[in-house]
Every structure is written in C-alpha cells, then in structure tokens.
Image (tube, rainbow, N blue to C red; front, top):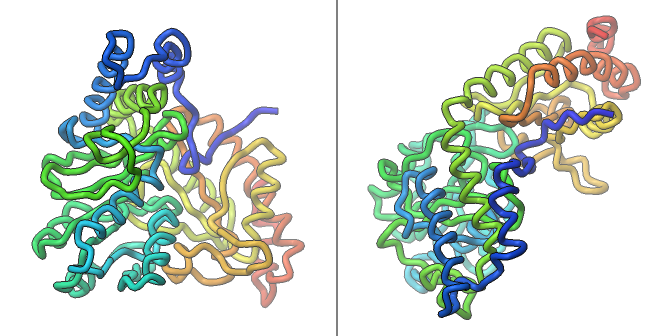
Length: 395
C-alpha cells in the first residue's frame, strides 16, 4: 500500500543529501571535536561548516548559532536562561495561548514557582492584537516569547513588528521558529530578535538536533552545565552526525525557499477541493505557512477521520489534541474560538517539498466519502445538518 505523507509539521523525511552528508560521521570520522590531535580537530572543521550553513539560512552570524538537542531544549534554554540572568530583578513572562507545549508547558511550570505569566489571546483567525501586546509589557517583564508560525494552523505572526514593539521597551524577545525555518524567509540581520529556536527534524534533518540563535550581546545562563562547548552556552560532546546533517538540511532549505510557491499551490489545491466536495467545513487560520492546511468538518470526530485516512495509507494529524477520557479539543482551536461542533473534527494536512500533485488528488478522491460515511453515523449530526450532508460528497 502506498503512503501519502501529509504530516510534515510533525516530522519530515530526512533528505537523501542529508543522509549522505552524515554517513562518514557514523564511521571513519568518529573523533571528538574537543581533542587536541588532528584526528579530532578535523571534526571541529565540519561543525564550523554546519554552523555557517545554519547561519546563512537565518541571516545570522555563525558565532550566534548554538547547537542543542532540538526545539524544546532551545525554548527552555532561551526562557530559563534569560530568567536566570534577571533573577530577582524581573519575573514577568509574556507569551500567547497558542504556543507549542515546549513554551506553554514551561511558562505554566514557572508560574507555579512564583513567576507572573501573561498568555495573550488570539483573534478568530489566529492573529494577535499587537496593541494588547504593547499594553501588556511592564517594567517587570523579563522576556516575551511568541512563535513565528503556529504548528497546528500554520498562522504566521508578524515577527518583525512584534520584535520592534518588544525591543522598544527594552525587553528580551524570543521566538520559536521551529515551524517557520525553511518555509518562510528569515533574515535576523534585519529583525531585532534576541533568541530564536529551530529543530532539525522539521526541515528534513534528523531528530535530536536543533539550534538556539543567540544575538551577540544577549546574556544567557546555560542550562546544561559541565563543559566549554558551544561557547560555554551548552555543555556536552557534540552530536556531530546530527549537526552536520542539520547544516546540510539548512543549506538545502535555503536553496529551495524560492520553490515554496509550488507547495502553496498544492496546499491551495487541496483546500479548494475539500471546500468544493465536503459541505460544512471551515479552514482555520488566515495568513499561513505555505505548506499547512487545518480544516474542520462539522459533526465529525477528527480521530475517526484519521483512522479512515490511515487505512488508505494517508498520514495526517488531528487538530484535536484530546487526552484520554477528555472531550477538550486543541488548545489552539479553543483559543481561536472555533465552535465545538467543528473543533472536534479538525485535521491538519502539512506538505513538504517532496509532496506531489498525485498525492493531493488521491486524498481528494477519498475525503468526501470518508466525511459522508462518518456523518451518517454521527450522533451530533441533527437539526437538519445531517440531511444537508447526505449525497453532497463526491465518491
């Protein structure tokens, strides 16, 4: 059975060129970059090259690139590292209600330990009220952490303007760019961001490697102690294969950025086809990443849709992050005020540069029948809504 993989916001295929670049470092090139001898010293050269490749993708200086184990560690290092620098001086954190759990989980943990946390709401289209952000900054604000693009809906925040607002008040600004890197242009030379997180496995590099960009002059307390690595900002022997792989992936992503319009065209084809063939649907989010479509089907459970898609070899994800025994939909959709009857039927399709038109058409051939069958058995389809859906799908 064929696999149609449309879950690239969860993780991506490691690019063949990346695997090729990493291969020597699992074999002959196994030295430690910190060693005094030349066998280890040559490894440092490859790490430096990867640092340059990542810096080029971000419009940064290589000295501002800190390699980590992934996006979650980068977020933790940015936020906790800043708060430790300002310990006893500033204890206020600003973020949004739609952040990734790597940020939301952390700030809520910190709120239980005496920090004041402001979670900004979003509008129904996922956008942010920038006037409210500005009013929320106080003399006690230590850091503002707002994602570049949302992992569920793909909504892109105006990071340049947000950074200007935050920096005008003299506050440290961090952005989680895990979903944005490699999908939209990022030029940190022209955007006043202090700290930025990315993760390798979201841009066709392996899992277990990421980056925290730290602008020159930004003070940060390391969270992993015990060595001089990464400019004394993150101790631990380097994950050389992962770092080299991320560097090559960043190089490929920069090269492919002009082709993101093709991915957007495929996404739009999928969106238009679903709107045309499936009644009572809504697309969640306005200004979005070119690869992301979050769509809600009224009176249908997202998990049931996923199971039927999976039976066909189609990999997507649910916009409903329901815990076992819970009927609560995704925190992102709740923050956007998506109606209950839609929120539970939310599916996220996320494409990559490896997605082809035939795969989109395959999904569109099967999606209407899936929705029709599920609505026929839905206990929520009533008051005339059920009758509206019968016979409306395209098999």
